[in-house]
Image 1 (cartoon, rainbow over the protein chains, first blue to last red):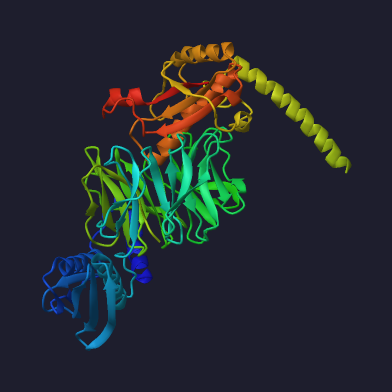
Image 2 (image 1 turned 30 degrees about the horizontal axis):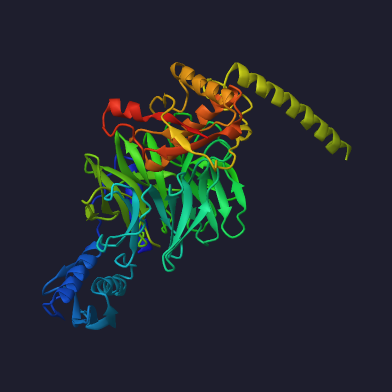
Length: 397
Length: 172
């Protein structure tokens, strides 16, 4: 997986030096065909939901091509309802050598079983981590107020998480995948809050005078990166969650900082700042100990909303020719490539845990929807659209 | 030992001088409007207008004063807007019990999170101007709404211009 993405990025980074805007071309990776016709399911709605979900998950993984009959991989098994839940079992066989790659049984809610089975199959067949079991937190406005929502990796199972009736924005996951930090106006001013999903508990992490926003929890879970204006101007800080100790990292009286995110090893932060003096934000990296920030975005009139992925690459929204396009930056050398654009604005990218896909908000005519983007070959896919607009998605780790 | 003592004396002199010049530059040239001096006076000490705790115990009174409008991507208070801030300063000078919350707003263009900080900078620029007019910074709070609270729901130049603003909410 790593090798493949690395090779792929080498290709596009080399290509980027010759062409102004790189279009992601079809990778040489061929999709592996997988036959689902021997997975026996009943005709009831629970079993059919399971089968449809599984097939979509396998396709969205990017590595597999589900087929009926033929195929290089065959899935044998059964799925049947058990109360309102589902019981299923599968055996995954590679046909050329008849080796069994996976043999496992499952029970639970039908969509959840499908997601778990899809990720197991993807990993057994390709060695790559799947994205079907991930959850996405995002902002929706269908109630007339901005609230947080959760949905599954395929965009299904959307459910409202907050009902504050004010403004809830900028959600990010804690590294445990069990908590969400965000900016809440529930107490009239922008505060940083955390929701513990298992206990269904909400706590306030920062409510200083002025602005409290941009929350991002460090990979070890101990520190919170945040933007505060308590000293008279928006600056980047780190707050130790247990002790409450606050460390200020930037000192930019003429600029505003926004959208910090941690490097995978937690030693650095990337953020947006307009300190270049142009009034247009660009991306900078700073050590978690502070020091002189280093600008890393080299192209585009504006670069915002960085997301430092588990693969070490930074995705961001880059303004190019009046449009926001998703770009990927290699932080070690600052090289920047653009994902294919279809004329819509793409904003707020977040890497999926497979390091291959990115979710983002895609907007056309002031309507925004949740999309899944592939850095290898597939076209953008709508995961959630309609019922108002959807913004600022973040993938669970 | 000697070295550190003379260092301390030197720092005291420096601080005294800089605080004097800081005051002077603020009175002559209220922060938030100048070119080379930036938002917070020539010493760049943005900490001098640090925020106090949020107000409690009073009531918000919005709509008493006219909003301050800003140029695209700018947090500089334009000359044409200054007299509106002077009016607010008059009220605060005449009513010791009054405080003000400045709400910073942006147009819808640009990143949501960046607009939150831009809105805050607009509010802070107005706050610094008020402080430069002699209003205690502890009587002025800021609240950024970024692009979340447009005054005009349209998507054209006129709507954007109406939305790039700082609003005063009187508090007492």
